[in-house]
Length: 114
Image 1 (cartoon, rainbow, N blue to C red):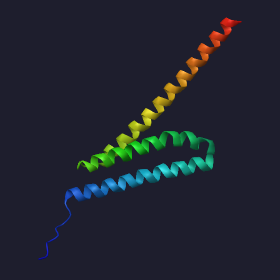
Image 2 (image 1 turned 120 degrees about the horizontal axis):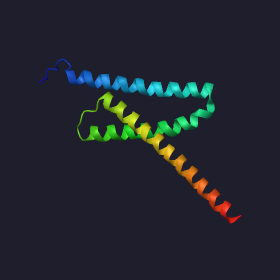
Image 3 (image 1 turned 90 degrees about the vertical axis):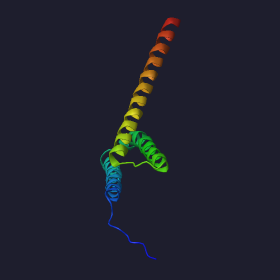
Image 4 (image 1 turned 90 degrees about the horizontal axis):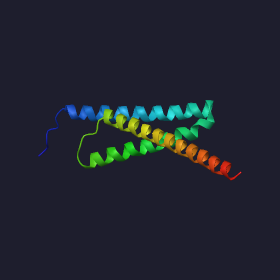
């Protein structure tokens, strides 16, 4: 016997909206990379250093949550991406501060040997 296929529910519409928003964010990331490549190619490396880990964290978190059966909305994906990018930028700033502190300490040690 054939089963009746009903009209799509609100959850199907939300999933489509989430997929479309995710696709738009991905296109935006690619367009920004293309713009940087054309205008300032040297900025692609820092852009990649910040974006790649953030995208990886977002994809992994969404995949794990979807595997557990939870609904992952586009807002949650966007928030995960922004927070991950912020963590990467903060980590890079801490790394620069640690390098500066090490350089200053090295200079004081060498100055003391004179």
